Image (cartoon, rainbow over all chains, first blue to last red; front, side, top):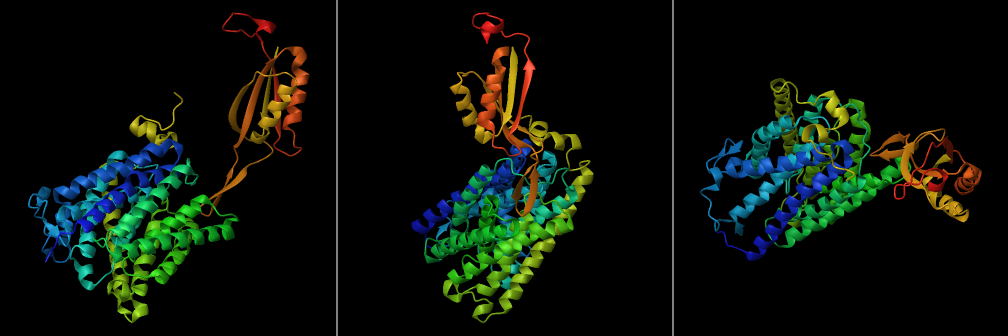
Length: 405
Length: 112
């Protein structure tokens, strides 16, 4: 029986606001700072518009498609509650109001859409992005959220994803890669941040926001929430340190961009595991994440030649894959009952691999096909060469970020 | 009248300013510029990729002087800016047709 808890409700309200902060401004500043000076406004706009679009979709029908009951073949929820009309403000989901759960999940959905934009900055038409992310939200995000969290087939298989390793990070990472492949390489693929300070600010806000992202995913103010925050912070910290060590070995010095990239990679990796693992597990998950993401960025990306501009696949996709599988290895029954490989349940690793592969394949195929269709329908989803060279801020928005006035 | 333009290391600007002040030269235009020369570029690394940044930030100083003051100014700039290494910069001297003080309308040497 559901019983209202003011403490749980207050905590999840705070976490909801923290997750909204992760999209706007955190992702906007993180990506905006890493982009070129001439594209900073457009880069930030991509995050804002994506978050706004998904916010509207979520309340019109998105929530009921992702979490509606009954589940239709384990693929999507029953899309019956348009505009949340059947939901009262005192209805409960566990110990919190259902509408709070709705807006908490809205923040996750909007963040995922914003994350995708990092792979395609500097070269995509505004119209193409708006149409793409609207359709993608409906046909990719909503089903995957249902599979993993809304009573769908992966949830029924026993897949563990505490806060979105598959739904948010693998999903956004592989989508970014798919769109980047359709768009092709930018004319200038160098990653020379125009304002690394913005990126540091964004990453710092992400780190803080992530405590709500993971800490709120248990939907209660309790020891599980505290554990989620503890292990999330530990994973981020060790990953930051390890990335700095890798930088020192490979390029001779620790770099600030490396440090924040490491922190984010650690947070990504611990996301699915935050409600299932203890401190030693978190340390290992965080320490391995930089190796996985560094390999993708430093070796895989140049080798395969794709232009995932701000390394969304490299950091979110790859560390997300590691984290999802690692959850099946390190899940400790003492934390949240679920047991992983190290606690006598090797089958959990297999379930996690299935969830990873399913997310990768479905998200990539649908995103790639959708981008291809739009490429044909819109006479290209990429801006003109002249617009790309002179910058998207002035050409697509008639604004520039920095003026002498 | 001459325009003395010096492109110097950013970190040497205080020394040049002090050297110019010591000879009684207070007026100057200072701007941040980027350029390239025999110093080549500087290496920057982002996420494992190294880039040669071949436009190096420098400080540009412009001073308008009477013809007879050029050598003194040039020597003061050299004294302040010189390290003996590649990248110390260059000094350019241009003729100036006229100088007009906006406030009073004075022209020529009197306006310098």
